[in-house]
Length: 252
Ligand SMILES: [Mg+2]
View 1 (tube, rainbow, N blue to C red):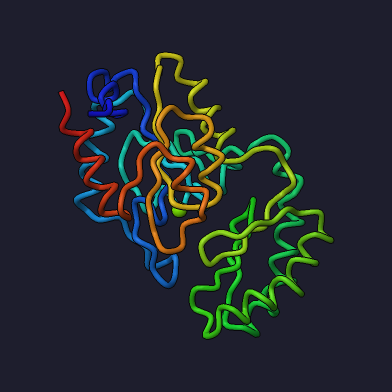
View 2: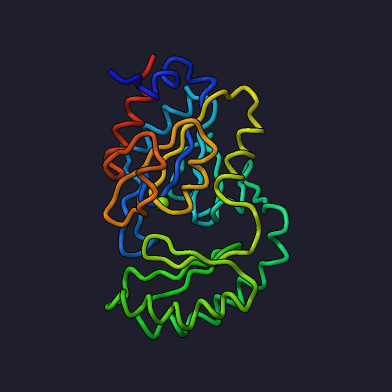
C-alpha cells in the first residue's frame, strides 16, 4: 500500500500547515458569490484544526475581508485577492506594489461593467483585482466571446494582467505575487512549520500547489486539466475535502 501523504501531518500537527482556498474548496460554488457559504460542520472542523495545527490559513481570490466573513473562525489567517492581500489581526496589508494599481483596477472595473451587463455578466471590483462573473449569463459562450473581444483589450490597455477562472475573468496588476508567493510568505513567518498542504479547485491554486508538500485537488466539472495532474491527492468537491479535513482534525 502506498504511504499516506497526510500521515506526517496527523503525527505532528503542531509543525504542520493547512492552507485552503475558499470558493469551490470549502464553500460549494453557487450562482452568485454573495450566496456562498461554508457548511457549519466544516467551520466546526476548521475550529478544531486551528487548535491542533501550527498554521491554518485561507488563501482566496476574494478580498481578504470577504474571505474572513465566510470563514468566521478565530485564529485562521487570511490571504485575499489571489495573494495580493494579507489580513493580520484585522489589519489589511497589500503586497508590495499593489497600492499604486488600485485606481487602475477601479477604472477598468467601471469600463468593463457595461460590456459585462450587455451579456448578463457582472463585474466585482475587489480592490486589488477585479472579477467578471459569467455564471448568471444566459449564454455563457457568447458572454465569453464578448469579453475576449471587448473586455480583455481594455484590461490589457490598462496594463493589467488577466486569466480565466471558473466562470470568471480575473484581472489584476502585473505583479509577481500570487497564491504561491503568498503561501511562501506565510510559511516564512512560521519557522516552526516543517510541512504544508494546500487544497484548491482552480487555476490560480496551481501557483500554491507548486510551493507546498502536499497539493490536494478539489475536483469539479470545471476544474482546469492541470489541477489533477499537479496534485498528490484528489477529493470529490467540497464535501470530499470536508471529510479529509475531518480526518486531519481527528488525528492523534
Ligand atoms: Mg476556488
